[in-house]
Length: 216
Image (cartoon, rainbow, N blue to C red):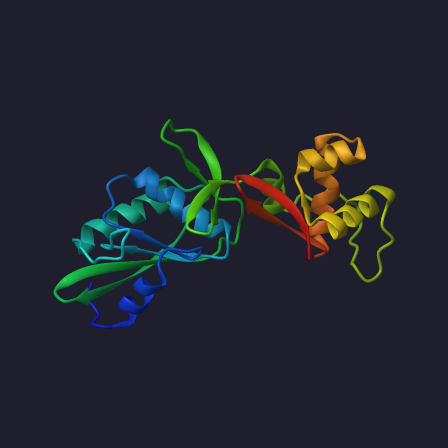
């Protein structure tokens, strides 16, 4: 793959690591990089810059080897398999690989942990976090309701009104908090949240290691 000369990559480095960008000094573990691929795919996509240290310094890599490792990660250690596109940039004689991961068409995307157990990962700020069970359900779009409703035409149930009222007054709540508030099971709480999420009236937000339900 021919290297591209551009200051574009340097501008990206100045942004630092964030929700859609991750620096990798080099790729040594296909399963570990699969977690990054899955996390981006479960969000709205992102890219890896390989050959860049955490502090933004360019170390350079052997591009063909890195591309092979990432392709292996995407094909063997992501379920379902993901597609990654690559560009190679030559920065002062050093190769940096930009690996682009699109948002997955089929979610959730799983990847194995260090023990070989498969999990769903999600990109939050500059970290790959384990998705909550609620988030997995929402990504799977298992609404478990018989008819399609919209925020404009809906008549909310008592429990839905309880949740939305709480969110208006307090900002956010965990699924456990909603279960206690409404005195309902996790399955019932998940079904309610998933249905409201499908109507676009609430969303999820990760904060301090917790998955919060928040109003839109």
